[in-house]
Image (spheres, rainbow, N blue to C red):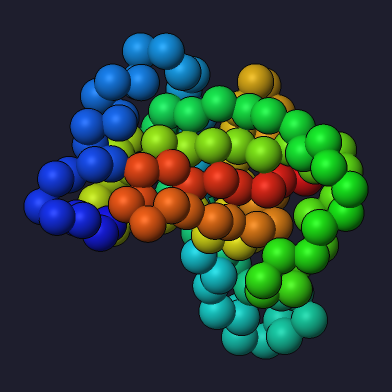
Length: 124
């Protein structure tokens, strides 16, 4: 995570807000390799789960095309994850999963603020 001005902004925000938001499970998905002899069977991906802090909102706007070309649709959920609660070296990325409010959804787009304090994950 970036450490702007040596201020550890992500950790300060996480400390201030962690008790006011909810547990969210970030499931990091790492694609595996194909099984020899079963080339049409796909890959054996591995998943690692981490409990972090965040909250869920609903994208209320019209269809939006993000800078990377991803279409964020009305009704998509947005899971905001406090960056300071992520384990070192872990950040949410497209195709990871998030379990929040009893539902597991796939991340289709990720944005973060310059300090890495909040990651906004569009999920469906």
